[in-house]
Structure formats: C-alpha cells, structure tokens
Length: 315
Image (cartoon, rainbow, N blue to C red; front, side):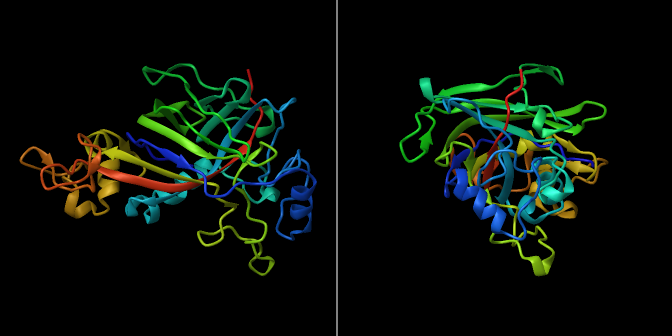
C-alpha cells in the first residue's frame, strides 16, 4: 500500500479512557462474539490485545494501535484518512480483526522506577510478536532518535510529561525499498492514563462491533475505544515541502482540502501563494502559538484520539 508523506506537527496526548486487565479483561473478550480469537491476537490477558507483558511491571512499552484524526477536516475525512489508519493499525492476521499495514509505529516506553517516559518510533516488523526496536540512527539524511522526559505515573494510572519534547518522526512509505519520509514534530507533550495492568491506553471495542455487521470495523465502530486525545500544530510552509506521491500534491494542498482553489497548478501541485504567502489561511499562528489572526494564519491545528497496546521492546 502507498502511504502519504506528512510534515511538521506538535502533539498533546490526553487520556480519556483507561483499561482494565487480567482475568476480567480476558473474560470480556472471550464473551464477545466479535473478539479476536487465538493466541497470536492476544498472547497476554488485556483489554487492548497487548502483545507482551514485561516481568516485574516496572517498565512497559506501548505501541499506538489506533490514531483517529478529527482536525483538520481535510485529513480527518479526506483521502488520506484511510491510508494513515491502515499504517497505524498493527499488522496482525486477519482473524485478529485489527490487522493493518503496521508501518507507523509510535512507541511510548514508561520506566516507573525513575518516572521516565521515552517517546520514539520503530521500523516495520513482519510479526508484532518479535517486538519493536526504538530507532536511533540516520534515516533519510537525518538522525532519528527517541526523546525522553519525566512522567510520573499516579496511583490511578494517570501521567503527564514534565516538559515538551521534539521528535523527528519516520514514516515508512515503502518498507520493501526502505523509502522513508521524515516528520519534524516540535513541542510534543504527552499525558494520559494507563490501565491497572499497565498494558493498555484504551481498550478493544468488543461491545461496539456487531455480529450482524460481520464485526466490521468502520468509522462509527472503530477497532478500539480510544484512551487518549491528540492535539497539535502543523506549519503550512513545512507541510508544503512534503509531497504526497500517490495524491500528486503536497501535504499543504491536502490540508487545504481544495486542489483547484489552493493548488498552484504544477505537477506535483504545491500551495498557491499570494504576495509570497500561502493563500490558504490556517486556524493557528505558529509564531505566537495561539489562534490565527488576520496578520498570522500560517498553521493549522491537529486533533484526534488514540489507543495503545503493550508490545515487546526489541534490542
């Protein structure tokens, strides 16, 4: 599948739903006719199809398994939505019901002993059970590495990063060839709530999938009940520098949502300019980090929700 190239964004993750675990979680999934069956789908008991539980419980690595954008509207409902959703979904077998391409692997690693949160990314793997290794190497001409911040986990599972972090996010467009696009992410702030078993943010949507609909995953019935909210900012100039080969235009044009109106007519199309500035007006100002004004509308807000499941951290 062909994925899209994306550009700069800053994220805030805020949990809106925790998850349980253990025997109760296993029973809830077992009782659901739409729950994935088989050890490969849920090798450890959890609410979210966790793939691994680390011994001792002092450290946990979670992979974002679902990320649903709500803003900007063109990305939330446009042609980029489905390819991105497929890239985020884990590449589990079809019988697990949540299978995707597994090419966008965002990892959150919590080390409870020292209140540390590491945020990074992993390359695509052929089988999730093998685990995911945090990238710390040069890709696409730049060094990609995880970022670390302090994030104590409260007794109820809630956490919040003590300071924002910057990331360079790799988006693997073609795992076979190694083609990668790099996504600069600034001012990343993470907060949320981890389930009592430490394996989930959010949970599998066992109650929302319907047997009469063949347990189909749709926008109205997603694979997971999200446990977090994502908000951020994308600079239009940076988005315009990122081309979407399958779409034939830049990310800026995709965000604007109207190629004839905001494209410059070139191949590939970039955002049309007036007086040296991008004609499309965003809803955010990057220089003030505040809502757009007539004098500054060079960015757009990004918002969405997410769920995450525990995975093995590979060397």
